[in-house]
Image (cartoon, rainbow over all chains, first blue to last red):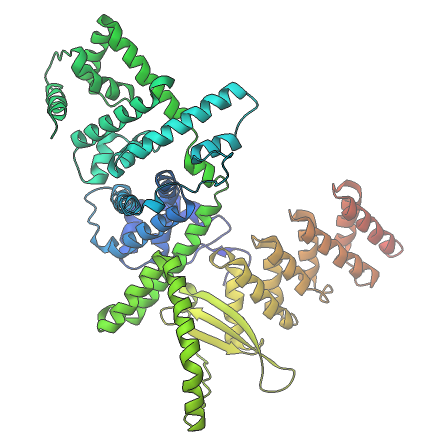
Length: 220
Length: 358
């Protein structure tokens, strides 16, 4: 048993001694493929390492799309559990990241469609005081208003308009828009993740952008 | 498909042709792709040529670029809602628990069992995914059981049908199991005889087990030592409980060695502090004295350092520091240079007690 160091290997590996962070060591040593292979053999720590590599982006996507922490938690949990249950089916025909995002976007799509079918769930949490802004983005802008009142006012206005415009988009358009503009993905990659062609994704992005532009008209 | 859609698709397919030319109507789509850096080279060239000749489309392109700029600088909901990353930590914890649950199911072979077992596994998974639904289910179950059970219990008690059985679990845990285990809880329960205590360590391995025995039990000692020596694998409250159990066996040199390592190397300041407290009374041991001095010199947590300096001061006052020159060196250095006022004062006070001896 190590006395002045800590075991840093995955269960099933030979234990090594060291004080460095486990993730850092694994990150430097193991690529996605190795981790996926180990996860497919039932090594849960390997799967958790994969989760830690990508879950920040996944949660970010979920939060931006659902705009509610509890919904984002549901999406996160459901997506990774699906990945865990199905990882034995992953055949390395694309990157693990693409495969994972395919699952995540499907879960998000389901979630957004389910929410759309429940009117009471459509709007983000809003204040019930008449003097307080009803729009979530507006509320956030006010909380973050800087000392520059003009800039704060413009930011607030943009927030309201973008929020309204995003509400006009279909679930699929929202996901594509989000992945393109806020996750910085290329349309080809988005097509791979959604299981469709780049051309189809381009069409969706075009429609989404046009809707948004119409909504923002006066501000642009 | 709408007519406009067909037009756009036609333009997209034209984009592959060399020397693509666009008119104002067809430019709308290409301007969007151009602005978000998704236009192909021939589309880019055509757009640049067209906006050079058409003021309207140049203005539209400016609008598109402004929109891109707005989107790029717009604060994102994710930043607002999880600024400190607490939600991410919460999600990771919940996922780890759900994964543990699903692994337990796999280990128990529920997947290959009958319909009832598969339903049960499905319920567990659904509850992991939808915790609110799970909570509601358990509340309803609790209400139902609360109403039905008292009458059933009364009936069976009257009939003398309740059998009493005591199960003592005393599994030995293998090295492999030790490497792969998780701890779901550490509990102290009163022993069979007055004044004794039994420790139950609930271990999750391929098959869940309970390692039970007194604090001096070899298996209990081994498991708990492993827990605090492999701190990064276990939660801090589990490590804290382990230290609390082991502190009753500080007279064992192996335990002292483990506690010393924990006091210096655990990632959590509270665990380090608890380990240091557990070493109280054994300052005459060189290893313990060195641990106190190292913690005092190097620890980043003020609470740990204060505990260390107090222990050392008490050691000096009790006259247990003779023939150990390192204490004097460290205390002198701290009394002159330490940034913490309390540490400086305590160190100086300890040196005054040390004075006549060294």
